[in-house]
Image 1 (tube, rainbow, N blue to C red):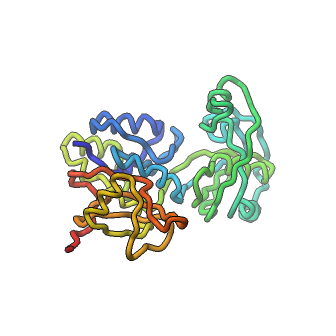
Image 2: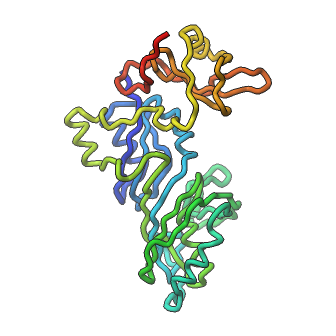
Image 3: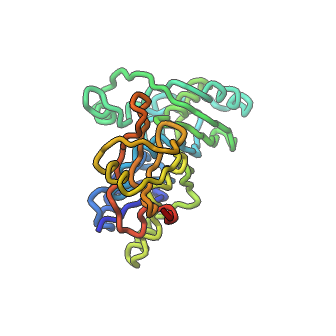
Length: 309
């Protein structure tokens, strides 16, 4: 019997996100395991690992806001934009003041444009940029839009400064650190990074890998799983009759009597089990299944309280 759910893991430094996924796959015996947003090996913090049917909400998790604590060192720039790379620039940071840093941060708030670093997973003609970079090849990269909802300087101990960043999908914190150094004229790179939050999942609630291994060994790891619909609570919900449930499971569009607000909603069975995500089609006036979840017998299956017909 497959086990569905989401693990909120505190990734340690020095581990790739893929290696953590592979570890969970071995421990759990589940074939379908994936993560919702890569962390660089040196970075730490919230890494969401989805098992079985929970992998179907990875795209939704990827859209969630993320919060980071970033330590930036002034006075040098590197080719990787972090402390792992070769120094490409050195500059005098001794005259940089906190007020100058605060002023320089202004343009990095709101909708911004970033050029992905060469050491990234973005693909160029089908090949990841980091592979080209390791071969000594640099190629032109297109600017990408990113959104920074909050950017605060929370600690100033020159040449180190600590930022807290709340941002949207696709924001490169390494690029932000590098670009800040260019604006200040002295160069900068990302010295340390911790992801504090992804959507509703916080670092305070994350489980460390040694604790997770112990939970697998002792057999209580399922208690650490978050249900699939814990990431869908921002969407309205509808409860449907058994006949309508079967129509949804066969991919058919349905009409909801009390139509939820918005373009997407959750559909539950009369017993409170999550059936599908439905998307509204204005042309037909019907709700069509966009993601259908198989019936689950697992104690972790997402359920509402039972509904009396």
